[in-house]
Image 1 (cartoon, one colour):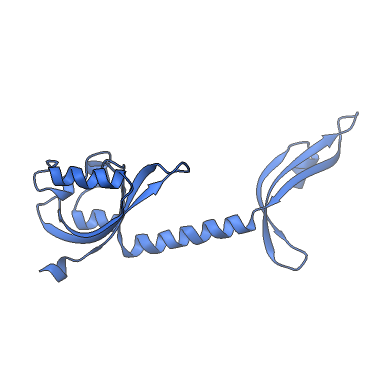
Image 2 (cartoon, one colour):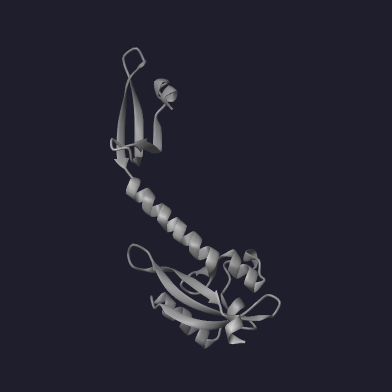
Length: 178
């Protein structure tokens, strides 16, 4: 790191440092070598921002998401019901490969013949409008096996408040239904 700076190569990124009180902090910093008239580095100017709180928050979010992914069926959809992603637990339960479902209507799992009914269309219209819902729904796996999922569908909004995705968090409740 320091040798590259001595060679005149700037460095930028996030770096762990030790604060005066001994705590570990993270800096988002840019180190810029300044050369003298002879072309040799005479000093390095550092511009830095403490991003410890941001990194801590991002780590906590990632850990929460890992906990959710390891314990629930998770799927993400467009506001009109096209599947964007599905976690491995949901894929395992449905018997599908992600490539068979991604960018296709959720109706493949929700309606036995995959046709989009009026009820299905109303469901997605309400999600696109920002309505959150919890329900137990019947799903149809790749091999025709039925299973039931108790799910919460939560609209995800962009910074302007527009619904850009819908997140489904669910639990397999087939055993309880049978």
